[in-house]
Length: 510
Image (tube, rainbow, N blue to C red; front, side):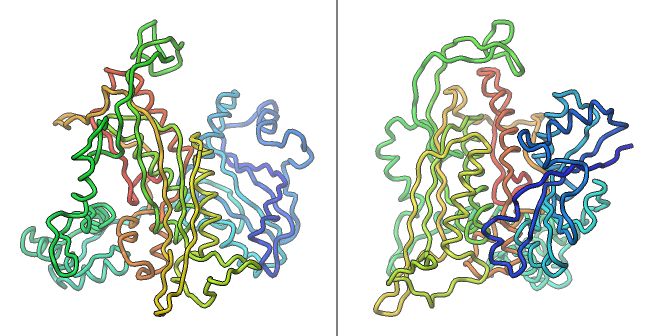
């Protein structure tokens, strides 16, 4: 049997500037450590746990009872999934001899005046997709939640209307062509109803975000067809001048031919390419190439700037790691293009204060501040430095009355890395090969991102847009990185045949 007990630590969470606008801001705050353990903790184990969780220079701000009085709002991670923070905390406990600790989750507690103040505060201090409000605190980690079963969309009975209704209700973004095509596919060819899971999968996998239909489609300019697609035009310079590129337009990132050098590599029993655990390092000759990758994460940053930028950086890192049969990331860059900032007290003459933005999107100033914080914070938590970047704001009302502005923002994430030259080509999967998925928990967050980001800004419901933004988990991606690195450092014995990251709201939200 397991049980949960609590420790409390006074904090200054209530002093955040974003809470200053509340009519009744919180007056005090604290962390609550919710600890699940097996059996009985000895007094020695409890003292060791207190040392790990308390503030070294302010022991008086830590204890077994709350520091708050009166009405309290408590928010914390959802019970269904163990957070990355908990995984790291439990790992530290195990290393310190606390073998009976099973899970530790940290919740935030705010001292408020009344329930109305708590209701106004709650949306500002928690992400409703990954966290929840706990009216009575966390007393158990047994959620009792059951997965929603899949069902069928009745196209055999109701035809295209059934598919159209399901698409609109779940933000799948099916257009007229999609509806016609999928209805005919299931009714005439497969002669069965599609499942809800299949509809989600088709919406993401065949979205503009994932397939780039426009870039690969026929191009017509001023009524005249162009003999090359946008993709072909983009690839033209590389075809004429490939230079020292060894990977281009065929993998998760590009690569330039590197060189041989002496490197410290892990070895087991004095043999290079054999170690996957703790072992000594020795000098060996390596032949590495330099990798580059860059992408944008525009729609998510417009809807939820911080998690949008965090997962933009994380997705780009996954792309770097998934090149060839595995590669490693080194450093990153980020750039932002937003509309007129309209900084309070510093509004510029050309900034049109009457200009409106889609109600589902954040304002340009919030996007610039929160997205920048998100990308930098993700890199810090993962261990990749953000070395440089840029920021641009633009918005103008022309004499014709037309409005030109970055209404939908641009968030660019780029990175540099390196890979073993022996690993630049993906292998061909064969029958009998194992398919291994590594990453975060598979839950509803972010599923719909591919479809939602392919729609016109403002066309989707606010709730569906918010749900379609993935949430960041830099600690989990670092764990994934260690697995990939261990395989890469095996050199010629690398077990990876082919590797790809699952983006666009895939099952691994890292």
